[in-house]
Length: 579
Ligand code: ADP
Ligand code: MG
Image 1 (cartoon, rainbow, N blue to C red):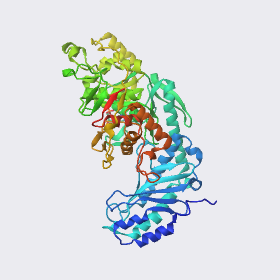
Image 2 (tube, rainbow, N blue to C red):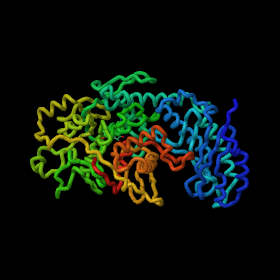
Image 3 (cartoon, helix red, strand yellow):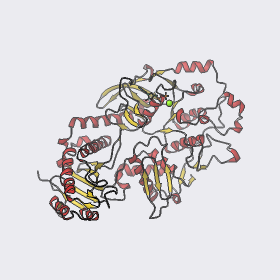
């Protein structure tokens, strides 16, 4: 079969070889002449960017294999979740193979061959593109040098031998394990199908029997292993069967819509269960243990976040009568308290439409969660600005159709408002709803419901363009997973817990810039801005946020709309107008 590769003007691999030989022992800057496109036997190498010295961020390159040669069957990447799974799989293959070729070949980053790192979640990334035309990997190479002197021999090894080797082993259907790939695709399709089924089943989350929820450590997302691990077993009262397109029938605990309490003694696995549910908005890789812990895609974790900035949020449904008459209908602060931050987090999630909130007592402000009868007697309502969450959970459900899953080990007052109570005991769940209702009936808490009226509608906000103005010299970039710099303004994201990958943070920085250029016009609400941006990203791909059109775009992963809104909401100095 004859396949037309590239255009006539494209240089050949032989020409690349000559160029490399020609710059041996020259100073590092001479590497710049390598920029360009090169035709190899069965792929094209694009050298899009050449680093300025051996210590600088490595050079960016792409390899593109025509799909006719790569040979991935179309059915494997037809649906969006399937395509994302294939791209994720190939990114991991490329990374693993590259790792084998990667060795220190001189100063600084010399000899490095890397592609974006994938974690336990399967995310749409710019690192790999698979479509009917081609398979394209976007990766980085540390061009080798001794000191600042080019070592052409080593450069030749990398560009003319290693990279073709990696392409051969990682980007052709015949060289990857077809069963493994098929399993991945089917798993992703099943996970997505289950997530789409939840709503019609009246569920907000599903935890499959046999799931492994605990993680290896506080600093690792890998599953805990060993004899001490207790697999998940659903209580009969909540056991549901679901029929998945590939796997067929599985069983597990279906958490119905409404207000769900997870109770139990300390260290019995409550937070672990909630954390798995939080991450259930994403698909997971096989072997993760949480493959079938599936949550509504729009579930939002809510926590206290003192110190965060808040711009023009109507938190009056939760907070009123602040000292010195501070406005809570249009509440702004550069330093929120535990309770005001938690209230703002809830209202902001509702503003984007969250149908499910997830709260853990470990990360909540106590006074936001509960005010018991004795405290109600001591401190008059007029002197207490907070309407605790316990008195609003029902309103959220009735007025906004928003369910809640709450981890509460410390307050039985919540029994009164719960629709279901699940007890975690030695890492296993048990239904204790009837017992909890009985206890609350025979031991009245004596507290009075504190509701100075219904929780009103959400006052949408319009972000004002002035807060996003950037000078040409202003930097827009992410640092790790938690920080974004937007010119002279900062965004801190360490408490946005469903942000799971540094690539998402890197994307957020550019997404905000994109939104500012295209949609933030002083008229569109934050919700409209976020929806519009996400629609563009889903339709045209994540590449559109990059400044490098048609080149290596950088390493980005797609965040959800809630994280986009969360980032904008945390921009220090954000100005908004209530709609
Ligand atoms: P809680 O929130 O109830 O206080 P955690 O969820 O923090 O408890 O869990 C306490 C410890 O138990 C953690 O170290 C966690 O990794 C471990 N753990 C949780 N679930 C399991 C399980 N199913 N099997 C083994 N260990 C578990
Ligand atoms: Mg806990």
